[in-house]
Length: 468
Image (cartoon, one colour):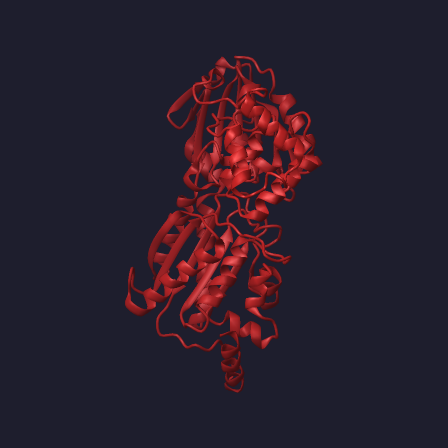
């Protein structure tokens, strides 16, 4: 196998190792086990004989896979349940009803499913045990607009926040304060039942009140914070009037706040993070070492504008090849987190595809640099791709086919760009979600040419000059 082909093959192998490390079934069985009537959840023990009913609820892209794992442990004791997942992320669950709904923009199917979940969870007694399964995407998948606000208005505020580059923390703060379940309100509905929440983290810093907008944990954000976020992005006059008035009513005390730390609704709750981005990166690092690369994890908490993050990664790659710092090649540089894209055009793509395209421009014709950037849930933005793969030949190969990388980047149009090259990362639903994984492989001493015949090398050089 030629070395460029091996780099690209190794990128996929390393990414698969990252996904396997955060598989929901493995994650649950690592933190939850049963011995007869004893249920062990992290550092706590529950005597199942103390409960008249044991049920499952949940929201998030990995909900169905997580429910299957819980069924394997507790199937004979389960009294049903409901989980809400993204379209296409269902799975054959026996005792729990799976509802599919829209993501990242909430839809009517999500509203109906959330009403069903609310009705199921509300009014549970002290001799009932609920296991709540939370994973990424849960916020959009559980729309429960407060009275006076419509789904269309919630969709509109989500759209404008996504388009302006707001962080997931900021978006979820708004979601919590126009919702009937987010920000600890699901725990309020289920009280005084015992509530165990198992979480696959898809946010930087693993903040429990941010993951799926924290439906079962205390909320630290406020109505005042929400108004400040709208001011920060100059959106006060762009969001629906009903939403702005609701937030202002909350600040004045006319609308109750979400439950805060110390609220009695949390006295019978336990929350455990069973999977996070760093676990995926560590597994990727081990696989890279096995494949013969020196490995370095930069961070699992990288945020910021996607194009700027790509520039930083490109600079690190060039330094490794030029000086052997901060690690000598052959090397694998890993990072995780969740960047943001400020929309400048009307193209199709996602943050991982945009990262790969921006990096391709920054590493153009610098031999020995290859990258894969992928969402661990198998989707990147509103596309069927998880991300994309790029290397030092990407831009020139595109030019040879008559399409232009810089123009594609300017229009946020990375999906058709990589689709034409055959370099989209297509995994299908992975049934997990711990943000993004970015992999760079660096190999010294490679030719600037892709695998081309001598007759085409002149055209390749012409393409290289055009990209510059």
